[in-house]
Image (cartoon, rainbow, N blue to C red; front, side, top):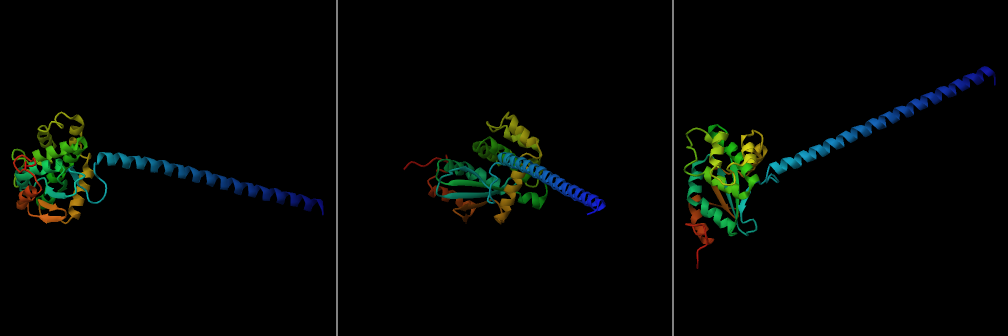
Length: 255
C-alpha cells in the first residue's frame, strides 16, 4: 500500500469517527431534551392535579353527574329529592309551607333529604339570579350544611324572596349578603362574604349543579320525588305525616 493510500485511509477513518461522534452527540442532545420535556409535563400534571384538588375543595359536592346537597338523614333508607329554582315563587310557597318540617324530619333521620338547584327562570325570563343565588348557597355549604339549609330557608322566606315579575334581586350580591346576615353562621363571616362578592368563587359548583338539574329532565319546580317516585307538592304534607313528622313543629309525634 502506498503512503498516499495509507494517508487517505487514515483520513477516511478519522472522518468516519467524526461523523459517528456527531451522531452520538446528536442522540445525547435529543435524549436530554426529551427528558426535560417529560419533566416539564410531569410538573404541569402535578400542578394541574393540585388545581383540580383545590377546585374540588372549593366546589363542595362536585363529584359525579347527579349533584345534590344532602341536608340531613345521610344514612336513612328512604330518600326525598327536591328540585327547586331559587327565583321560583311556587318553590317559595312550598318552602314556606313545609320547608321547616321537611328539614326537621331529615335531621331526625327519617329520610335523606337531597336538594337540587336549577335555573329555569333565568332561561325563561332572563337574568342571573337563580344561578347567582345557587352560587351563594355553594359558599354557604362550604361553611356548613346547616348554614346552607338555614340560608336557603331565608332566601325562600316571605320577607326576602323577590316577586317573579319584579327586579332580579338575587343577581345582586349585596342583596344576597343582606339576606345572609339573618343566618348566625354567615353573619360577619369574612370568608363567606368574600366568596359571594367574587364572580368566580363557586361559579363552577353552581354550573355543575344546574347542569345536573337539567339532566334530570325536570319540567317544573318544585318537583319532589320520594324514593324516585314523583309526588305532587300538595301531597307532601300527608307523606311526611305518614313518615312520622309533626308538621307543626317538625318533631316526631308522641304515640
